[in-house]
Length: 228
Image (tube, rainbow, N blue to C red; front, top):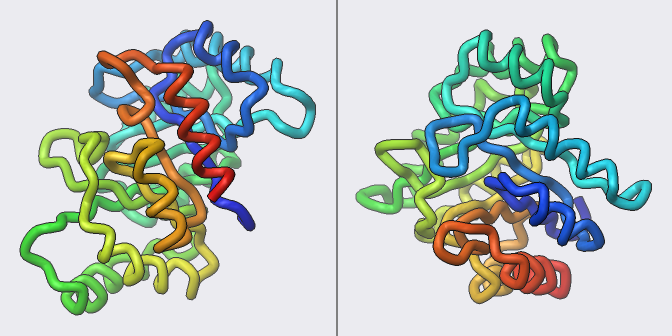
């Protein structure tokens, strides 16, 4: 990924998707985990049909967000809404990631919670990089998100960005794209890109107004990222 990719997550509305059909979005995310943005497979299938209205070659890739999903949920969603990517936010093992890649023939992104408290960068490199090593070859991207004790992510809060380079060095060493999420908005996206150069940004609440996706905020966020 030469330029920073944009993932707009938590889409629920056909109307919102239709309104951004001409924008350079790289990924559209649908949530199938406990969240106010949760949808089911049938709803996702309807939204996927809207993605086909993008111009040839510019269609965003569809991403399903799951937390420790069981086979019944995954089979139901993939039957009704054949996603391009499964994004896992739970305690899924490397073996589980590999299993899903092979079963569905799609990419798997693994979210990694970053706890900003009580952890030096040195500790991070030594301890967590060791945990990540087992995922080499089983995931297609690593997504850093702010630690949330309830849902594992999606808190809408930023983590301390000085944690990024330690993960970034590991990801680049293994040829794995690095995405960053957590409290991103049009106001801080440019700073993040200029200072840390992630492969992609993942935004949800930062492009909402009163819990609803805001077309003006989505447009502004995409413009800031692509200009940076």
